[in-house]
Amino acid sequence: MTSHNQEAYRALRAYLTHLLTDPQDKALEEVPALLRPSVETFMLGKTVYHDAADRPVIYAHDLAAWAHQVIHVSGLEYPVALASVDIERLRQAMAA
Image (cartoon, rainbow, N blue to C red):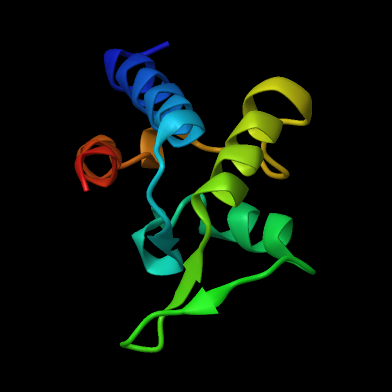
């Protein structure tokens, strides 16, 4: 595994772990693009609300449930090419 892939894996795990304890609701566009399709699939049939800018927003507890499923139950529905992971974007998403 390359050093980038190792760092990408650690950043991805850190982001998912962060969502388990982050009490903040998030706009769907704040979810890194690489993970957005998985979140959208998970959210089918669940409640999404819209903020003042009419952006879809996901409740923090739903994001935590999604992260738990990815980490402990099913994993992502699709393979993630670690070379395509934007490590800095994941770090920014955790800081937001």
